[in-house]
Amino acid sequence: MTELDDRFVRRGLWLNQEQGAFMGRTITTDAKGGNVVIVILSISTSVAVAQVWQLLEFIIHQWRAKGIPADGLFWQQQALLRTLPTPFALAADSVQLWWRWKESHRALLRSLTQILLAISFIIGSLAASIFSSYLVKTSNIEILVSSPKCALLNLTDLGYGYLETTMPILRSYAEDCYQPGSFLPVRCHNIFTRPSISIAKTRTSCPWLSSMCLQAPIPGGEQPAVALDTGMVDMGPQLGANFPRKDSVKFRRVTTCSILPLEGHSTIVNESITQGTAMSGEKILALRYGAFPVPVNGRIIRDTFTFSLSNNLDSRGYMTE
Image (tube, rainbow, N blue to C red):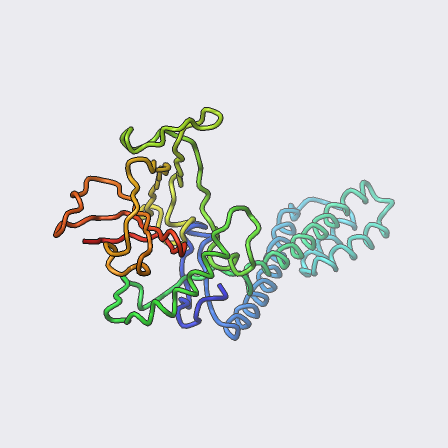
């Protein structure tokens, strides 16, 4: 989360709802506190592994102590287990005992059990040490945003200069991150877990009245309109809201787009009726959709869109008299 100010990061223990009540328990701290956590975790892992091994040796020793006559190999193995050696020492001493008592009945099999037990525990300890390092992350981490200004945007309090400052940033972010395909700039990978939401596109019938629909034949016999469907969007895993499952909100947006006809809805007007929105003497293409009054003096004409025929100005909506 490289573009978030540090003061808005929630510190301490919190629950990542997407990962569940157990695996989602997370502690967020600064670099100095993280080093302390790593040291405590390493010491705790070493102590826990040592205690589990000694407990396992004691259980095996007690299970073998049945009070029945046995040979020297058995009693030396018991004496070895009673001293609670480390896994490496148990494996090495068991090999020596087997070599010394190799003429005894099933000496190799009786020694092999302890050797394999020690080797298995050594491998398990190494695996535990390796996986414990994955409990600590220092890059590309998920954090909980704690913003004291999380509320509806109030331009009266912020001032319109706020939009002038933030709009270039928002426009740059939208151009970089809201792109089709999976190849996005690096800055987009650290904003949300899922940088974009997939949208299904299908052809469909015109959503308007027949008079407002394009009557020209569509190549290939396809439907004239296009429907864009987001599917069910979950505010938790898809939009980053850390809600419990019971409080999560899902919504769906379906938008249908169709080309509007020009015939019967377009007219060319002079600059004089656009109230100075164009140069003197300029012709303006006005597009009018809907029921509007007849353009008579003192009556209002509502142009849905207007285009300059000479300056190629951007389309915009006007209310003209």
